Each structure stands twice: as C-alpha cells, then as structure tokens.
Amino acid sequence: MEELIDEVLRYLSIRGETPDGLRAQVGRTAAKLTESLRPKHVYRAFPLERGGEGVTLAGSGVTLTGGLAKKLLQDCDTAVLLCCTLGIEFERRLRALERRDMGEAVIFDACGSAWVESGCDAAEAEIAERFPGRYLTDRFSPGYGDLPLSLQPSVLAALDAERRLGIHLSDSFLMTPSKSVTAVVGVSDKPQPARVRGCGYCAMNKTCEYRKGGTTCAV
Image (cartoon, rainbow, N blue to C red):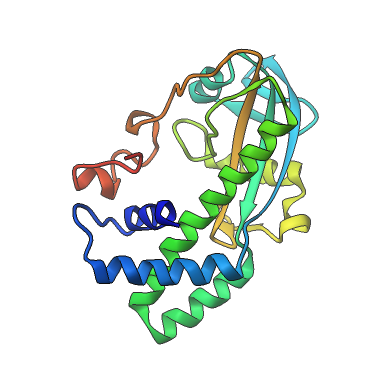
C-alpha cells in the first residue's frame, strides 16, 4: 500500500515532504478503492512481421509505426496487446464525489490512475508466466513517443475490448471508462534493457507538469 500511496502523491504533483494529514487521507482513499474495485484486463499474443510501414502484429489488424516500436521490438518475435481498466463503476463514484467533495474527488481520481497502472503491472506479470524462460520489453502505449494515439481503435478491436471490458472510444481516441490503459509488450529470447524510458520519448515532454516542476513521472 505504501508504494501505491507514493504513486498517488506523484499523480497529485506532491513534491518534497508530504504533510502527514494528506498522506493519511490518500491512504484512506486508496484503501477504500482497492478493497472495492479490482482492475480487469485482457491480452493477446501475436507473431511479428516486419516490412512496409512498420511492425505488424500478424492477424491483429495492428501495425505499429515509428521508431519507438521498431527500437523496442527489434529483438522480438512476438508482441502482446494488453488492455486494463477499472470499469464504469469507478466513473460513477468519481462523478458522485465531484458533486459532494471536489478535494476528495481529486485524490480519488489520482488513486484510480495509480490503481489501473498497478493492474497493468499484474497483467504483465501474468504475461511473463505465460512465456517462461523468455524476456519482456518495457510496455509502451499509443500516444507515447511517436506511437500514434490513432492506433487505439485497432488495438481495442484486436482485443474485443468493447465486449469484454466495456471500453468505448471518443472521436479523439480517448477511452471510456477513463481509467483504462492499452499497451504493447514485446517478447524476446534475449534479456531486454529499459531502452526508451525517459522524457525524450514522451509525447507530453513539452507540456508535462512534472517537468515544469523540475522532476519527472519516472522518479
């Protein structure tokens, strides 16, 4: 729980020493959320084909364009598409809190962001168990680096995420429920270093609130 609380505080852009009262409030909110809502996920593995516009996940309808995917998947013969969500119940609770207590709603929203990422970590551990003796790349998502957000429809379709998880897309490719994440993880026979972590690869690096404050989301 302490690790989750630390993650929530980063989402809240709390830097330096945290007041005990705020940390305790975050802890209470995080505990209520984690006791009542569990992240749900689906994933599918696909063989990789190279050539043309990028790296294609054979049979998925998904082609990953740009240098990020090429670099991360250069040693891989398989990639896994992943989707994780807290579901619509989180949205209902958040809307109710916004009507009653906006300060608590902000904390609840940050807890949701941290909790769905924790769900992605759990899904990734499950994927690793499916490929014993092999190695996973960092997971990366549409909208990060030069991987376009416009891939979202084909990624969700390949996972049947609308039917299986109740996820819908807006015209601007944003997911509902909002606490939903899509990602790609490569599978290789070779150990995979953390190749592309850092601000230089992130599409938000010019507008990031963390960077404005002299830190990053990765510390």
